[in-house]
Image 1 (cartoon, helix red, strand yellow):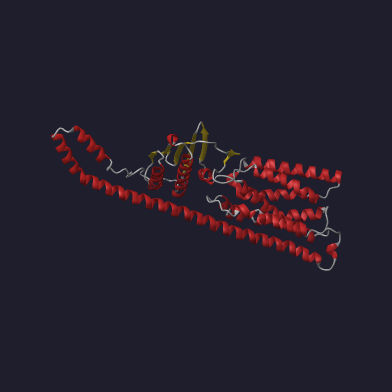
Image 2: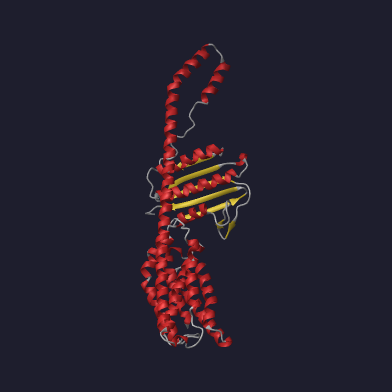
Length: 425
């Protein structure tokens, strides 16, 4: 019956995952309860037939519940595994406290210990409902992917190991002096330390995410500055060209009067090279125009043909940070792929238009050489081992407000279609 603690445990783990469920809540609840009941029956059968301590059955049972939890969520595994282990760490501390309060100190534990543990877990789950559904959910749904998620799992694993280490091995050992009281206090002290560590992690991750947002905003500002400088230089060139056009007409008129067609063609070729190549405006929307103008210069430096079809109004309901992040990542990934492609095959096309007022449709297509590495629907980085960050960020940004992202590739062509929904979409 000790496996009943999986009920409040899974409930607590699912609290911050409302927006990431693969199944409807009712169907998910039925599947979870059925799995827990099956584990209870299997655990009791194994314990009765093979006289195995219930403590050792917890590990395979927790592994089964963890795999079930991970595969029912639309979220990166680093976050889902971290949340599941966080709950396991908290409940392991409560388990030791329940053992200290009860009179049985070694497994198999009596029904009163299991019941006390279950009640304590349910009480803590109810107490953690608000922080789990608000603070933790905000952290999980944050656009930035804090690097602390990669090491967070060590914290609950450490406390689980400590709780297993101090678990009494000999009957009656806690009856000596005040060991029972100390053991119970240690259980609650570990719980408080673990919760304080989670709070510290929350503040660290929040600050890292905030810094990442500031970095993105600074990057956007630098794009705007670069775009402004480009427009200013282009405007000066246009003014100079308009000023010089009268002189060109005088020269052409003189050459025409002499009937020197060869000199006219030669002079026109030379004058054409002085025409400014800058783009005064790519899009009415300032964010898209700044990002596109910034990458136009980079693509031109690398000799990569870039074509824009941007039909967007001045004001959009899509957040500027989302639009900047998605468009920048798409253009950056396309440029990196084009640099590894044969020069004669380099070509990038980007289009954007508004649909139904609050839905923005983005499409980016580029040629590529080599092989696209994909594993379980996640694209692997070509610059380092592990998952690619750029396309993962595009997918996350698109899906967080009910949008959509689709990647198509084959025959040397990579295409990304993104749907971004506005705040009122």
